[in-house]
Image 1 (cartoon, rainbow, N blue to C red):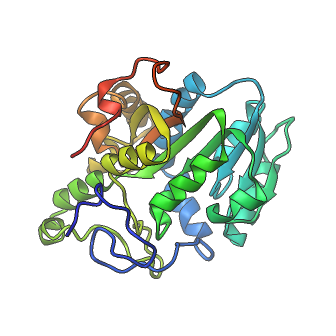
Image 2 (cartoon, helix red, strand yellow; image 1 turned 135 degrees about the vertical axis):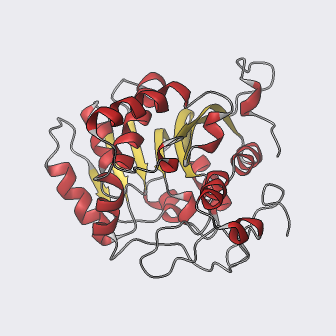
Amino acid sequence: MPDRADSDAPVGGLHGNDVPVVQDRIFDGLADKFASSLYASARGHIRLAVLTPLLEQALPADGSAALDVGGGLGQMSAWLAARGHRVTLAEPSAEMLARARETLAQTPSAMPVQALQAPLQALGELAPGPWPLVVCHAVLEWLADPAAGLRQLATLLAPQGRLSLMVFNRDALRFSNVVKGNLDKALEDRLSGTGQRQRLTPISPLTHADIVRWCQACGLEIERVAGVRIFHDYLREREPSEADLAKLIALERRYCETEPHWRLGRYLHYLIRPAVPAGSEPPRDPHLQGESR
């Protein structure tokens, strides 16, 4: 099986576990499960707690327009609107979009959020920008062709824009399967989901090498990378006490950008910008670029 960092898997082609994937996963019928299994749990609290300082340090604070791609239940759109951004939320699932509208209606903000029912592939026509800020969290791993999804995101960015990208980490999924005792599954690298029934294992879990290669191919530069949920998913107690959750969040924040810990985050978060002309590039951390595993 070829290394997925060395080639872009075509639509309908084979993904990491040799399961043919012919279409994107859309979450109609899964909004309640999504809300309860992620956002209402410790996992959701940790995710937002780690992302908040990363984004507040890095993203423009000038009330610029923002496109929330695959905005799901609206949590990130609400977060952005509360900080003064003029947000357009794009989501292909009618059910998720309806729930997002409910979330946004309950969130105080001087900036109304525009809701758009559309997949990522349609945004070049429906919301072309160019956007100074694009947020795309936990979307690429649900696409049949995630490399094409990143190329589409690159076309939406303004020349000085920023992309906040978060993807499901294939390497962490492998590690988690070993911890659970799924040794044959890990040895055979049968990690990705099939997009069937109520299961929420992504159809296209990605590696850091995938993102590095694809960014280089479409003229994007990675400024920062962090792991999200580095420790939580390996705990025996998945719903810790309030006191332990606070300690866990402190640990997650402390080590989210530290080698080697960030590499095993259940999600990998990237701050990405369009490449600048040769000779005028700012200094970069060496572990962010040109890496191949």
